[in-house]
Image (cartoon, rainbow, N blue to C red):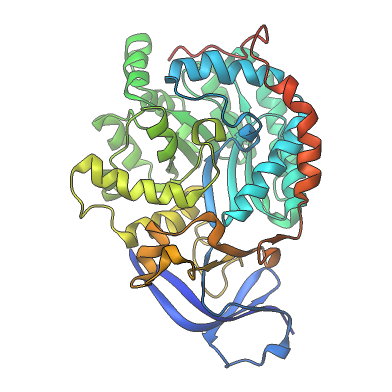
Length: 444
């Protein structure tokens, strides 16, 4: 008996920057993995414990959110129409001073609920109180790479504390939870702290998730203060010796790109275009990065700079942002956008051999997308519609690790009413900015 059969689906195949649809397919899942993809009718559906009818729907890999601060959904809409300096110092780091561990548990669930509805089955999350986030991921049935945020001002002792979290939770939830060290950024961690983080990552076999060169202004400030760019600082401190997810890198110089190209086997960049547009941070030249062999994955960042946890928006803005940046409508094509959203995001996430593709032997993280809405008609190009038309609400069913966690928009693991009921009484405390005190100050 197979555990699951998906019948009559169109299967999205993205290979070598080509994207095409295989019509009329059945997907057979045994345990956590895809056992077969074959023409509809080849195998008797009675052979499966669970059967999903997917006629008129596209089966594609679950999205991977390569950079987020998921519990920040608790402050959605509270940092509007301000510059980056004010966003940090007047809003985020005052609001986060109110955070309590249990808030993370419920905020993480709310964000996971939203991401499941948008077809996101895995997230690389960088935040605090991550034991509580891990418990939420266990309950949701999704996949996560979790990093406990560290600021240098809090002392070297926290590196050992977060390493204990990394070792305790890595591989939990049947392997759905992986862990990573997460020093915040070069502008909040000095060289000593970064070197100690790199040494600890080597000692325990961990990767590193860090913000760096978020803007050109940060790069200029680092050159003035340290005589090196943020990317050069990370290189000098040994960060890139570990598998690294580099958030943003918008301020990378030509010399920085040479460094990143040299370490491209271990380092990928998380690209979060909605945050960049909203905070007027600029855009990376992804065409140049990818030509150098540097992996680029999609991210949402947090909901206070993005407002939604929706990678359909991120994929669309990635394609359009590159066309606008380069003043060339032929750049960042539809197949390339889909490659970034699937295979390259899996590479940045550190599971290129397991995720990002619907293929025999891969983990069964699958979403079913309905293209029957008026906003898709006439459906002259399925791949164009996926990149430029699709909405989170088009996702009908979500499977992670071979388990159905949302079926026809019905959540099977999380309870929306319970989540809202537990968050609502916390909001008055969480929204206070006056006299809360900043957890850090943003001085790039």
